[in-house]
Structure formats: C-alpha cells, structure tokens
Length: 426
Image (cartoon, rainbow, N blue to C red; front, side, top):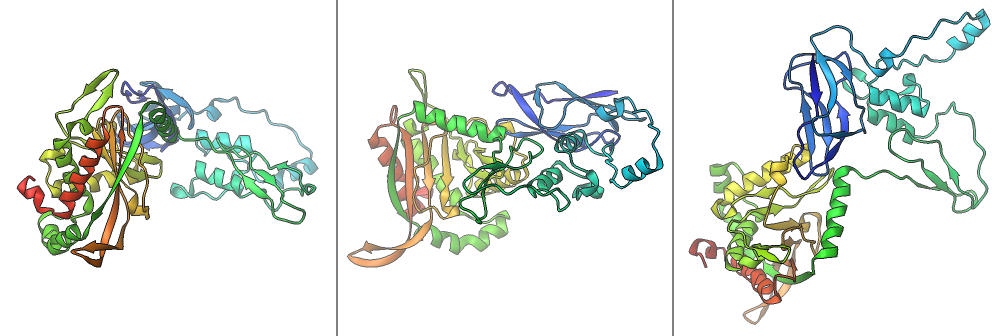
C-alpha cells in the first residue's frame, strides 16, 4: 500500500482545494500517472501516483480543503477497493407484496456505486437519478460537470408542476448540486420571462487575484502616464524579416519580443523603475525579470521571463509561446510565476484602445500595450496615416517621480520607432 499525498506547498501557500479526481476507487493506475488535481491561489498542482496498482480508497472528496502532505487516498497492488459507499453496511432485504414490488420496479434504479465519491455526493444531495444523466467522461462515465449541467437545465419534463408566482414576487428554484447557489427568478411583470441570477463561489486563483489587486490599490500611490508610438518601423521590420526569422528559429517574430527588449533597455537607463519598495527601503534589482500577463480560463496569470537582458528576440518569442501553452492547459508552475521586477500587459489583443494597468506587487511599474489603429498624424508638415499604438505606464509614485516615468516611456517609444537603436545600444 502507498499513500497519495498532497504535494509540498511553497511558503506563500497554506492550503489548497481538491479540484478533481482523475480516478475512482477500483481503477488501475500507473506510476507517474495524474490521479488528482489541487487548486491553490496561484497554480493548479497535479498529484501523481508513486507506484503501479489500484486506487484502493479516497480520503478526501472534490471541493475539500487540503493541507500540504495530507493523505488523499491509497494505492494497493490489487483487490477490492474501498469507498465511503462500499464501507456502509448493506441494507436488509424487505419482503414486499407483488403489487409493492411492481411499484418499485417502475422507478429506475439509482446505481451510485459506479460513481466517483464527489459525483455520488452531488447526485444524492440533488436527489437525482443517474439513469437520467448523460455521461460525457471516459467510457460514458458521469462527471461532476454532467451533474451540474443537469441541475442548471432545470426540472425534467416529468417533474410535478409548480404554481406560477404572482407578478412582482420572487421565487427560488430547486437547489443546485455542488458549490453553486440556487437561481433566483425575479419576474419583471406578469406574463414576462423571469430574469435569473446564480451565485457561484470564486475559485482560489480568482479570489487571490482580487485580494492582491485590492491590496495594491490600498498601499501604492498609483499614477499613469501615456504616450503613443508609431508602429510602422516595427511592422516594416517584421514584414521584411519574418520568413527568414521563422526559417531559422521556428517561431514567428511578434511585437511582444520587441517591447520586452525595449523595456529592458529602458530599465537599464532608469533603474528606479526596476526597483521595489520594502518598508522604508528601496530595493534596486541588478537583473531584469519581466512578467508577461497571460489570460487563462482560471484568471490572469503573469509568468516571468528571467534575465531578459541576455535573451534574444527568438528566445523571448519561444518562451512566451511556451508560457501561453502552459496557461491554456493549466500547467504553469510556481517557479514560472515567482519573482519579477517589471511587467507588461497587452490589452490590444482584445481590442483595447487605452487603459490604466494596475501594478503587480511588489513591482513598482507596469507597461500597458494597446490596439494598433491607423490614425492621421503630421510628418514633415504633411498629414499622413500611420499605425499608432497608445502606451500606458502605471507606476508607484512613492518611489518613482514623474520625470523618470515619462522619460522611461519616451525611451521605449524611441526604440520602437527606430529599432536600429537596439543594435547600436542607443
């Protein structure tokens, strides 16, 4: 027998939530196979099997709060698996009359033994019949999402009719299984379709994001300065060398790598923008670790590009592509997102024209990129159309003065409008 334990959390994480079981008692598992996932306030951790065998039992259900190195279940070499349902005493047989037996036979059997502990709990709490659920899991297995989807679909056609509320009154629908609260139906007027509301608890990651954002607003003196950059030189550079760049490096040349290099050069010229505040001390960092904001299904994450002063454009593009893939698949690690001295966020990918990005503590500044739009500008006394982008630099005014912030942004603008400056170290 071998215990399945929660991975050791880092010092900044005290607990997590058992997000899902990938196996149920009785399933065969192989060494290194993922058997469960745990969500912390930063990342989703995978729990793997330490040996081949059979999942004998589970000690924690999906949605439970778990601590570092806590036992989640056990793996054995074989034999009958145990579960909460299997360990319960079997009910005694009841003698029934033919008519009573026929009445019972008319109802579909509730076969809960084949369900995972978390799904079984939802089915029992919601008073649902597994025979009426459509399984989308492996081999038609019923998943937690199938139960929740069934609950949100509303009562079945065979459910008894309910009285229609009077106009202006509020009714509460049947409770939904899982963490979701019941929907509230609030009719606007008589004969109109009621408007629905549903209360869903935040995930740990989303709750942590909310906590950090509010914390930085309460502590930092955030100010934002703006500028605009003519992206035509950068676009011409990318168009001219794109094919050769892809052929040599196997990755496309994007704008983000140019911005990372430009920001790195600007950080060298204005070290205070790369610094952080700790109590009454200003910590000047002698390295350049730039965080790249990435949107994922679980919320905004900021993986870190380390030592960007020694990275090539191709290396930056490859690392960003790797981070994006990890974010989509929920594979980012704590190491990927730990640290950072400066951040860049690109709202332009979603069509943002202008915004004021918020700091990622303990960093003191963040650069916001935006949508590229052709606008009329004046060049050499002539009005011409150019692809323009607004830039925004939010900074902590407690340690960064307006002069440094404005000149920092102007430096980035000058580099992007004349990329040759990167080669000439200007």
